Amino acid sequence: NNLFAKSDALRGKRVLITAGGTIERLDPVRYLTNDSSGKMGFALAEAAKLMGADVTLVAGRTSGQAPAGVAVVPVVSAQDMLEAVLDRFDESDIVIKAAAVADYRPVQVHREKLKKTGDRYQLELERTTDILQLLGERKKGQLLVGFAAETEQLDHYAMDKLKRKNCDLIIANDIGMAGAGFNVDTNAVSVFDHNGLVERYPVMPKRELAGRLMAIMAARLASTPF
Ligand code: CTP
Ligand code: CA
Image (cartoon, rainbow, N blue to C red; front, side, top):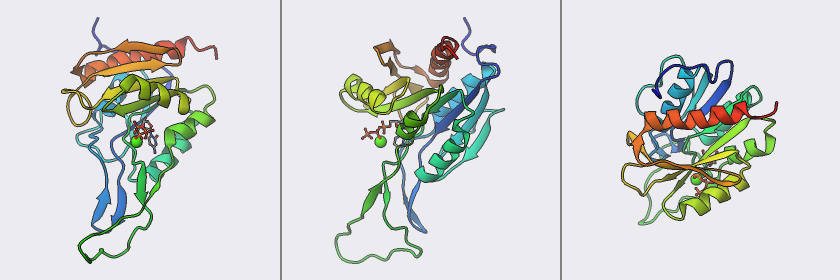
């Protein structure tokens, strides 16, 4: 069974995927971001496209090329990502939040380059909106899929996020494990739904994993009664 083969499993379905890291600006030359490369999101977009879906990728800071035939909406900050996703949420059938969204942003965005003063500098940050949680509150039949990046107690934190954010599936990433997580071409994940563990996958190429994950989502969508 070729995971990269074209199929009609998602024909006529709209899939919205967020990928990459957000950038939270501090001043004209400095910002806060994270190690996400967007590779997992790109791989999911490619797999969904191969299954016949109409795919939109809301992309923060990524490295590499988005897959062909996918509509890309570039965004910078968590707030931009929130707006881009809300604009497209109602018409989506599957929404996958693979992006690494900043949890905090600088309270003040300085218009001029900050000059150094003193031996220590304290930066004040405020929480960003939790996009996934907001979608969980607003969803009307969309299959909502979140990610969880953890370095410890993977299953526990993943289930906690699934419940707190009202997701249908959580894909948990052990970012401490070799060959998993940020900035590499392979990943190892565990998938959970409201009843607990659905599937544990060993380390494999992100493209192959994406095919397997999209197959789970397509099956769930097909069995939803609306
Ligand atoms: N997420 C989001 N908006 C945020 C923060 C996170 O939509 N402001 C989403 C991510 O895209 C991911 C999921 O929430 O799908 C989990 O992200 P993660 O960073 O693992 O969890 P947090 O809830 O932010 O908790 P923490 O970082 O404290 O572990
Ligand atoms: Ca976080």
